[in-house]
Amino acid sequence: MSRNNTKKPKPGSVHIDDDISNGDFDFLDQTLRPSKWDEYIGQENIKQNLKILLSAAKERNHPPEHLLFYGPPGLGKTTLAHLIAKETASQMRNTSGPAIEKVGDLASILTNLSPGDILFIDEIHRLNKTIEEVLYPAMESGSLDIILGKGPSARTIQLELPPFTLIGATTKLAMLSSPLRSRFSGGVFRLEFYNEEEIVKIIKRSAKILGVSLDDTAASSIAKRSRFTPRTANYLLKRARDYAQVQKKDIDERMASEAFELLGIDYIGLNASDIKLLQTIASKFKGGPVGLNTLAASLAEEENTIEEFHEPYLLQLGFLERTPRGRTLTERAYKHLGLDFPEDKQKKLL
Ligand code: ADE
Image (tube, rainbow, N blue to C red):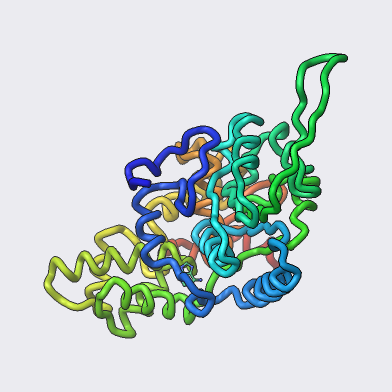
């Protein structure tokens, strides 16, 4: 498939071993994506569990049971699915929740599967309820129930599907209905943020693939700004490479810092939008609590963008807290902004 076609999926479309999301990141991800377990750094517990699951399934001569991966974007959910497809020597069919608009779209995907295929559904929380209900019998007993006709004369016919493994990925586990969640009989795995050492390893591996030379201080400087996320680390590595290339130099700490300053990324990886979000809570909402919708309106930003792209890292840094009454800024965030922590909040802590 040509790269130009990957931007917007057609409803119900399935791509064989290709991604459905944004073109540039896909290309980046695919070049740098690990193709062997040994190359996949971190997420040790998940890897161990998957290896057992896969070898047991292989011994039984049956596709692995259905799996669900969840966690913030960029942590390697799709990469894991690719590794599983490779390990089981199966074809990966790649689609996403929003691309499956009608029951017929899903029916067509399922009936076109070959035995042993991996069906990867990204953003699976965005499947609508009616479509979800078609998935239940498909996941549980490998059958597709098709209703013919309407009213009292309606009949159901059952089609037997080839054995397959569904791998779902989501950034929002809570939005998945519990009947769907419970059908991932192989397991539900949460991907964790990476530590700095792991990110440094990922950066060094990527640098080798890209043929760029960088020293340890530069690798660590990129890692510190990576938001503990491989996708961001790889993105920053490429930006530092571009900058150093234009300056006709190798990537050292100074080159990297200059490149990131120009991009408006600070020394812990916060960008201008993150800082604006924090400053807005501090200045307009006295440090919170402020509800997500109010905050989104005030920033002229989508709630989803705040929840998916800004908050995970700010929560991880301990800059933000989610309370039942809304988002609250912590003392650490005030310190990072160079502001005094309000006295009334100090008293509350005592
Ligand atoms: N790219 C994305 N995730 C990765 C990981 N865990 N290890 C190496 N490269 C990656």
